[in-house]
Image (cartoon, rainbow, N blue to C red; front, side, top):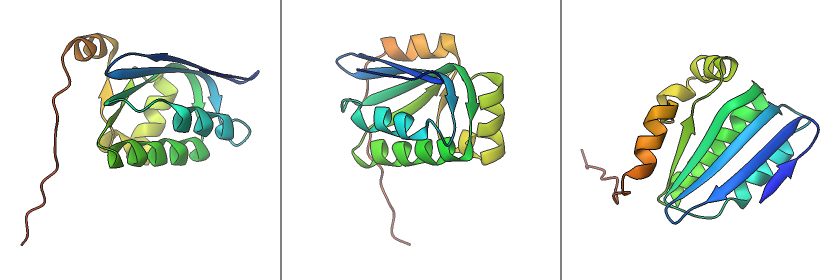
Length: 128
């Protein structure tokens, strides 16, 4: 599975437990539809890793698409993890507050996490 334009390139690798999506280029108003399409068409696995080291731009439209994908993956019991965001993207994540919502892994942490088996997790809500 692959999305490609002059300004956005998305490569997808599918494993038994993890989907790795490498995003390169720019996510802005002109490319956000392709980015969203790639996120929505990713096969359902317990973990979706978005590798962002080659992403040069993440606009507000891209932030909204990322948050929607995060909520969608979480609603089905999965986990969306951002991997090695570029400095520009890391700043957007901090300014938008997404760094508090989504897990972000550095490259060495991502490799270690991919080697560990995925444990089933459940969210418990306590009544007040």
